[in-house]
Image 1: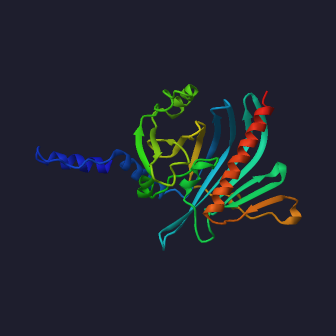
Image 2 (image 1 turned 90 degrees about the vertical axis):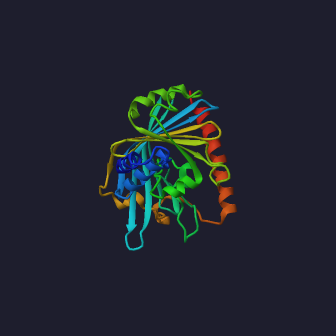
Image 3 (image 1 turned 180 degrees about the horizontal axis):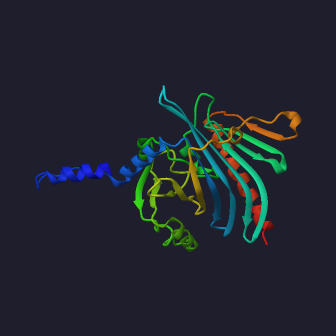
Amino acid sequence: MLHALLIATALAFQPAADSTPQVDPARAFMDKLAYQDTKINSLTGDVQYTVIQALESDLQKRLGELYLRTLRDDQYNEEHRDYAVRFNLLEIDDRQEDIREHYIFDGRWFVERLPDQMQFNKRELVAADQELDPMELMREAPFWVSLGRNTDRVFESYNIELHDHEAGLMDHPDFPELSFLAPTVEGAQQIKLTPKPGTNVEDDWEWVRIWFDKDTLLPMLYVKSDWTGDLQIVQLFDVKTNITLDEKLFDTTTPPEESGWRTHISEWRGEAQAQQEQQQLEQSTQVLQEKLNEQSP
């Protein structure tokens, strides 16, 4: 708002022949998001995570709660961000079942807790002295990922466009059923991120569209398209910020042997190993999906 007022005032006093640099609307909006991010220490809300697989015409939906917290060191102007999501209901076609799935990311470890199977999976995504950029999680994380406050970093890797709330929903050629989402984000501001050629993110996914409430600048919806044509949809409801969250939500501690949990720990072994593990994960996911398709009526 202030930027727009200053620019309009400056233009009014410029000679007609003078050309005044235009402000990029996408960057101006991203700057607003970045500023809003500095005022948020925690964020939580109900989440609905939907995966649509184009080739199999398969739809899976998980419902639960999302948690995000940011720990800041004002002395060094550094921040650390933790994510967690708990799913309690799974829908496959017309079937529903109660589930317990808990995912955590603490900047270094990605943890999957499956209490019903007493299974604990823990994967180190970066070296011990590093922290992974949350944007890197967009490939596989089953939750919304914050853009953070480093606007320059986002623009380095992605082309960013502003769209009205209906774009990509009312006119999607392959998934016309997305039109039902348009009324849920009416009046919202949509941004579209497309990986730039030559960056290390261009092979992860084709594009991501994210909708934000124009007044609060809080996230409402994101839709991600893989190169396979599959879609991941995350809807957020009843979002609250700056409330106290239980520390246990972000606990990545491995259960002790006597607990009865089965544990699988994958430590960081460098980029080559990480790529191999990613391929194995994708293969395992494909096998699991094929099994689920066989079970579907």
